Length: 453
Image (cartoon, rainbow, N blue to C red; front, side, top):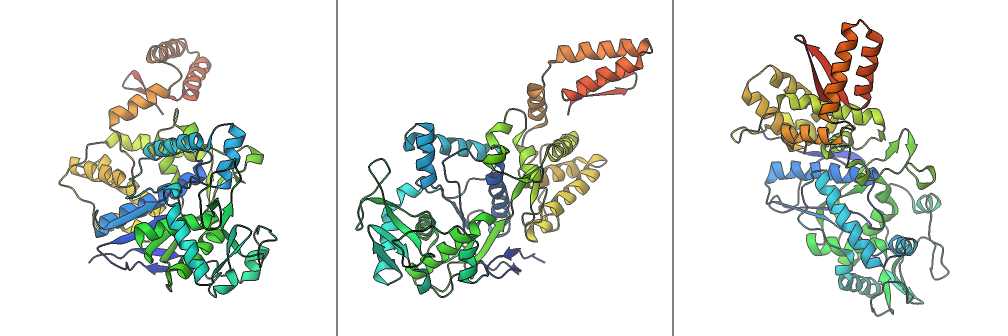
């Protein structure tokens, strides 16, 4: 019996069976990066979570049946501010960050979306959408600004499941004398000579952030599509505003049927913030941590739950993958994953449940046949881990070690001499020093062997 996919839909606040609009053309839009600075691990979580959803959809419906769009926001006030602080042009800044972002995605072994549109390539579509909203009475122009008139959209707040006055009270609403009401949000704003601009019926300027995603999703997915995703911080106002302007511009009762949001990441139980100096960028891990370890850590908690990032989490994930490589065998093309193995992922992307399945498969592989080893590796590969050969894994660990093999063997020789002299305190000290440098030693069959942890 074929399994169904279930997802927690924030539009209904319920876990629902996924029923695509068209099984031959399943459409998913996920908000990508605003390229003003290098992505951090908080940005990496939705990348990994929606990559898994993408894999599950492809596995169930077919690899050519899914249209996954993840945008790049390359015009925004944060980008303008960052370029000034870094004293480089906006073009140089955005090009650098986009390159680094794509490198980060490769490092995390993510499948490429079908489309990765940039906002600046779709300004004309945004101008068309704004013009439509003005013509139908949902938007108004004041002093070269264009605003969406929230009171004209009766379903505003449906996604957040809150009344309009509660939403306004709980958020930082931009104050402007140009607005009819404080809750109205900007669709177009004027630019000065030092800011990026495009010509429009309302003067030279640039689009509002919320509008960018509405225009790009419309182009690549149509007026109505299946899944819209992102971090929980985007639920209000970004996604709420997307719904309002898209439904009004497209004259539809629905924008996306399923709204999926992942929870925050904390660092040692503290919120990531510049003020606390605990923002961990993906690029900072690359030299010493393999990408699959980082990815495994990001999957260790259910996406609906907060994930606390700490050294123990990384070490545990490193040790687990290191242990799993003991049974590594190249996957057999004749072996396929059954839905019972994948079933936790079908049930609202339950990654901890899937990891539990992997532990069981590992135990069978450890004492089983080559077929069981291949099945285990294939199940790991499905979520993007054990994607390197065992040789590549060992080579990376050697590279990151702070001492070379000759130094390791010298230390082992000194430890063996200390043990012969019954100087066990010194022998234990050498073992600890090696361990601190990432080297595990084991006495076996009269010999001392070593490996990188």
